[in-house]
Amino acid sequence: MHGHGPTGINLESWRISSMKTQAFSNPQILPAVLVICLLVVLGACTRDSPVIETSDRDQAPSRPPDLSRVPDAVPKKEPRSRYGNPPFYEVFGKRYFTLSSSLNYVEKGIASWYGTKFHGRRTSSGEPYDMYGMTAAHKTLPLPTYARVSNLRNGRSVVLRINDRGPFHENRIIDLSYAAATRLGIIREGTGLVKVEAIDTSTSPAAPDTVAASPLPDDPSMFLQVGAFSRPENAERLRTRLQEEKLSPVNIVEGESDNGHWYRVRIGPIPSVDEIDRISASLAHLGIGESHVVID
Image (cartoon, rainbow, N blue to C red; front, side, top):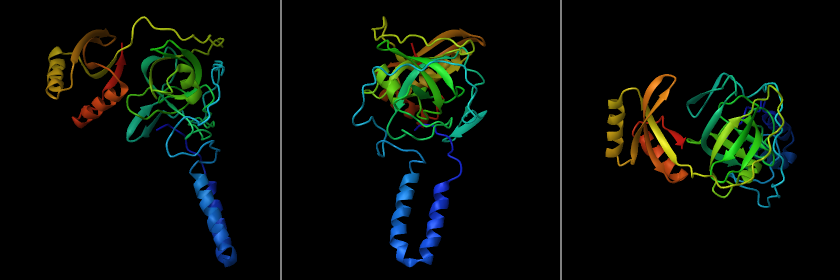
């Protein structure tokens, strides 16, 4: 699922009500009006924006254009969007807090993409989604935010503009437009391991050059971090529980942070995104729902 903002007053409901009144006052036009009402209702399902291809599921266009020459977004200083930047919001019972700033934001994780099902629909910032533009959706970064997104497996990199909320699928950190996902080479797999780096536009920098595809020196590995403890015995207790549930290999990684010394419990390395999702579902069934993906 992808995050889209409210469309405001529902004009379609008003139009249907008006036509109903006219139809019942003139029974001869009732059949035609019923057909029109049905078409309006179906049109309302796409909100009030055109959709290139109609489908119940999200997918790539049937005849995709050549997107290899689609330019990167050009970072520039912009005011915050009037929409999509509440202090917090809730989706599926989970609360998300909008960051006050994107400065120094860097994160590694799993990217997904969205295409025809949402093309032309209103984004959380109020702008229509263009699957052929260099944009993306993020759960907490301010809208808009410019960011460099790099594919950790093939070395490709793009600069895009984040103008939407999402993805609200567990274990995903960013939802790329179809064009951005194509440029990064993750369309076929559906997901990819990426690094997201917010770009500071306070000094109006020029857009960085796109990095050509190149092999990386080390193949990144995925882990699920299940807990972090200040006391080693608590970490050991959780590791034992996970091993008893046949969730392995389980490791305890020691590390320092601004808050002191920590013992982090991680499952992995995990070979695929599908396996990440499967293990996450098992953890949720065990009442452990705060795991997150770590890429090393």
